[in-house]
Length: 256
Length: 256
Image (cartoon, rainbow over all chains, first blue to last red; front, side, top):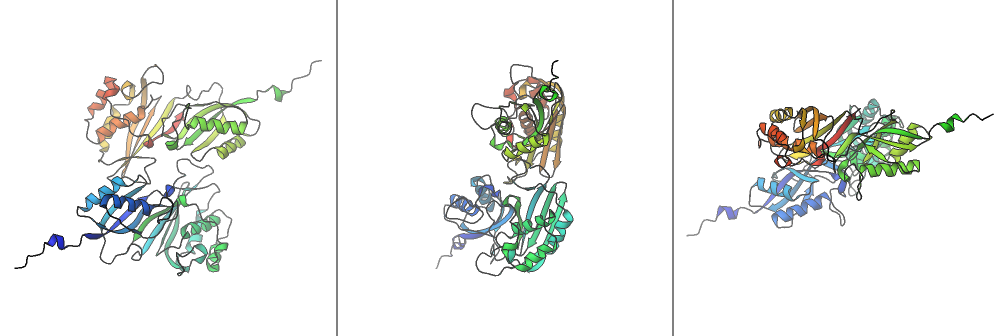
């Protein structure tokens, strides 16, 4: 009589995980692994290697540039783990440095991919608009001394919503299309604080910062509102404004 | 006939100034000048020397410990300055590092002293109370994972208001009295954010952080409320809780 196979041993030992990650981007050369320098992916892979005692490759929903923050970056990885999900979650946060944390952790759904399955990405850009710079806000907000006009910012944003070729505002990772869809793009003002929330299916490299750079030109009265549409239609990066600084940008949420 | 003295030359060239200063305390060894290490006073004196081309001594309303922030520290200094107040203000902010800024600048009233004329000092302590630490909030808030009870925090705070000998909660700068008056001490909760606002005539060294340390013991259920009064009455620092970390503390305002 053949022995019944141990059902525990028959189960595959490697599981696919999905996690939401927050980080302070100030001391990182961006999300994606580089040959040199500290990256979020690198730090996550070191933590996973330490906890699981194996080499683990982390895939993000997308890169964030050097200095860009995240409150809701999503990652996927495969790892051998025989203890509880809670144990893995706790162990990761225990070994990760103070500027990175795993907010939630689950098994990944079948066929799920952190980048290709992402439907919507939500970024927020924060501006502090007052004559004086603020030492206690400088790390997470871009200081603009010249008064901004919220109506001009809104008008500029509206021209960006929809399906457009955003070649003027960013580079594709490889040679692919520069067409993206923005579902929403709006500014909110609360005293000296201006926040720009933008939701799109995907973003080109540096795109949010270049969009903000252009809108700030409009908000400060340097550009007429129409110029945003003109730059967009030109598909020429040389006509765009310089990108807004990375410190103000945060990846808030990725939806699947 | 004797010449009439030039009234402009007769006016003293050195003026006394009063300024409100904000700083991110993370990269400072506190406010007060030390023989070694970066201090707020040191950085301000270097900026003033650069701008006025003379040696300038800065006096603060009080010290803040290493790592403690300020949104409303007040300083006084004497300096030679023949241009406008606005020019001095702008010049100082231009040469100060990003983690210090002069918020306002005026001539000091006759007989005014930054420390001895101060009537009320307002500090705020910020706690993030949730199971997970937050990379983007860690610099300006103390993370407490264990749930806090706002009513217990309030009850503990009430026993501190009034004139008391606070020897159990801090050291005097020299050998002087440890009696201080707290005009107000209260917690506010907004979701996971707990803020403690405390206003007093003056504070001993490390006093706000030790008060918060004790109140957090009460808020987390480790201490009964009565223990705060017992520790206060004991005047024995050994009975107090460890001071809460510096990152959560900010000097908000000094009143004269």
